[in-house]
Image (cartoon, rainbow, N blue to C red; front, top):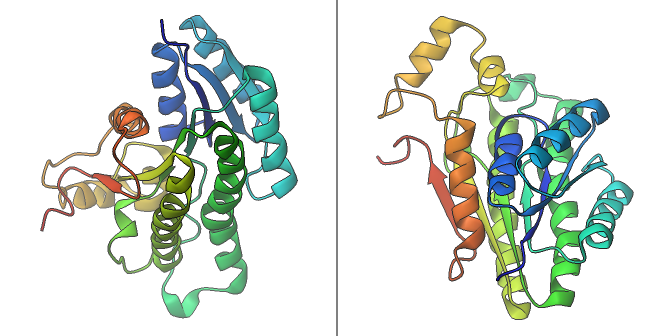
Length: 247
């Protein structure tokens, strides 16, 4: 019988990250989750264990390299290895036109979405290279492949995530590790509500989706689980967006 996979999920306390942790727990993987809210992390661990998974919460801020290094090291110490890492932590930042943006807003978005992914991959890849195997899935966005007025910083950060993914994939292939990304379209999470602000704007936004609805966190988690195990896929971005990038 194959030994259960060891999975690390950053940004696991809400939305896509939470759904992904639950999806891996249902497959009886051993799951380490991270975030900055201890009470929510411990509650999620209880939910994961109720599904039959071994689970551990490790408090970490993905913008802090010491936290990230300790997160990966504690995961390996607890479970013996690291087979799959899902980097789902991130932020949408503050909306606004380019002429309204500031260095502080830039730093807030890029530290979470770009620096956080870079640091996570740096230490995940170190652990996986020692094993000669592993799979990393970064969470991007439909906005990683197009522009959006009023969301320049978020859009730019997700373009950067996809560039990091492809570059890391080429490096990691030399030691048997795959790196890919899943790029969701609009998904029914608190982030979508914050971005659209009103029910009318949300309805108008979802009307631009060919399938005429938002995705669910569970639907994106299914895609993440698939990409994590797709053994001949690396350096790719799987777009799961209801058809928004079909034309």
